[in-house]
Image (cartoon, rainbow, N blue to C red; front, side, top):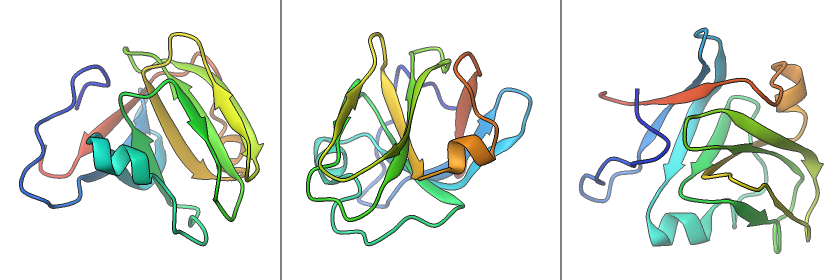
Length: 132
């Protein structure tokens, strides 16, 4: 499993994706894009018209987000360096901001997915990148 604190080196220009799971193995996000370069973190979900229920983005390092110029609401899951969920900002609409103290990563999912998947503060999550 990849660490939240130290992102792996990017290979070429391929998009890194992975599966986001709870520590017990329960899948949180089947298609999770990893945004860990300056460009991919800046771009985030801009330009997208929606997120499907099985996809999301892991932004690292990151402790705060904004939804300026976005077209749809999201759930933002703030995670510390050990992968522990600190805060969930549910149904965060366009033109909003959110942050969490001590957060080192943020997972953005389709609005309502955190609740549907019973994700809560205190849960431990991890990303398994493709090929690892």
